[in-house]
Length: 252
Image 1 (cartoon, one colour):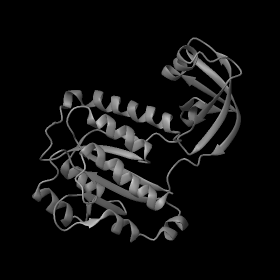
Image 2 (cartoon, helix red, strand yellow):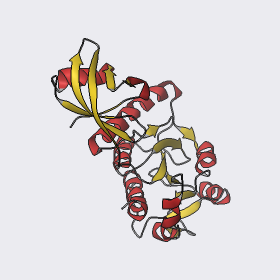
Image 3 (cartoon, helix red, strand yellow):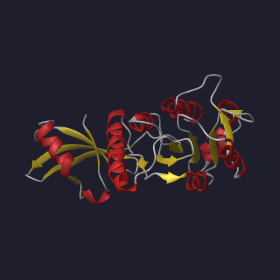
Image 4 (cartoon, one colour):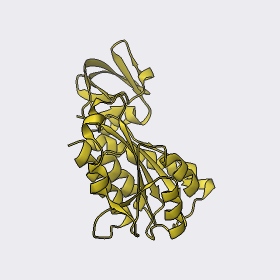
């Protein structure tokens, strides 16, 4: 069933109003008709079964048939911090991260990034990345669209990532603990009883990884130096692998 994400302001008195690209997609691309059903998500973990009732030039209106609490969202809040990779690899990283349960994504610039931020094109790139996250959320049945932020500096990333309950700094150098060991040290039962989700920061480097100085600064601020196994993973593989480990530990 087609899935759409709306704000609460678009849901009133048992009806939903869909405008913009989504309305065009329903009426023109999907060629749906009155009486057909769609799924609407309100970004607050509720899913609405709706029946289409009225089409106009600018909007589509539907009546809410039923509402249920969504069960597709993870019990944790994972924030992926991804160092800028080459080419269009970040597009794939975003798509797979959404599918594997990420809640927020922030690109950042590190010493060994080949790609550098261009302020004049950053807003356009962020908008496109948000669309990728939206389409991935629709495809995999999420009830929440993960936020994709503008690119930040390494220093800003460290400061923000350190606020999480667990901050995983994925690193190939010495002094790391395996992701398995770190995740198994967390009491799952206490998470289930908590009123708020466990927050996890996942920091992934670019193709060249992190410099010794960057790793030292991350360790000083309290990051957990995390190893992802015996094999070296590509930057576009690492986040999906790590998120899969997190989902296996806390969500499956």
